[in-house]
Image: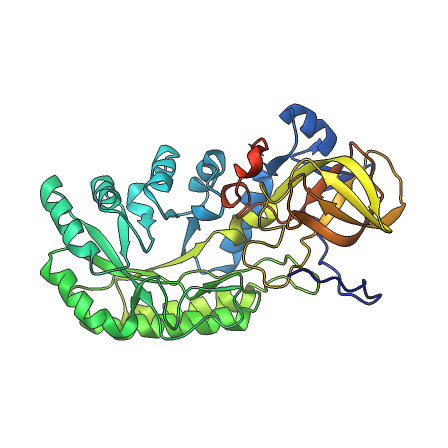
Length: 417
């Protein structure tokens, strides 16, 4: 659904996006003017990810989270091999959601002992690959147990498992709820005693629990509440476990601001809350290591989507910038990746000069569908054919989450600078 009401004068604004420097009215990425980077890439559209910003985000988290918390990268957010390779050297582990992602993580040099494999529909072949690789499988169905046990017998090695729990609560205020109520993810908490008994009967190497209540949350108090509830649920379930809990993944849910009126997440209360939980765990779960699993929060703000204006036209008074990329490359920014009422991502025009003129325009892609909108009636710097349009907050769920084959347009390039 697209909101067609006129722009209110007091409409809330996007938060400032100052992570990319502006030099001479032009964005700079990785120390290069964006226009020069576009020439280096050779064509538009493209995604660019800034390795300095990726490293800084991990350092920012390390400074706030207790040192004993392990930080895992959920590579579904951005599986570009170069990004995964960089992140593997910055974080403590990688979370994958398919055998394809598992291959990328292993090729990037990630430690198999610190890779976990989640997903509600793992194929038998994928489960066997995971056992052969020695990674931790987050079990999401009792159907997986005999397959894992057979693989362990065939290969003569342990099948490492944690049980993914569908908790009996939700992450309040999350953009996408991954737990609570009926869900395809994990095993309902009330079914866990029986499933844990089966884990023991099959002789699997039980390590702990994985709980992920929701994602894209900007409220620290909601994240803290979910972490506390997750810990206490794991503590209750530990009484039914076949062995001591040595692994507890509390999920993530950390959000980044995309839309007008949103504020940045305050990490300090979350760090304090985790410190209190760790203090309890020293007494209640003394063998457990704690994991926070983050994807979007680690990479989302370090990426830009860059597309070029190929036409500028006016239809009944409304100005349209037609670009060479759209929802086929950036489904999220088009509003077709989970939004109910479409809202604008932060967008700008990277000027080559110091012009200050602005106009209200809609930025649309080249596809033959009215859904192909990157910005709906936004106040932007005045653009001309050939100028570069930039979508911020594009480091997560971009190229790999978009229908790049749709209508036969060229795929976009991704670069890490």
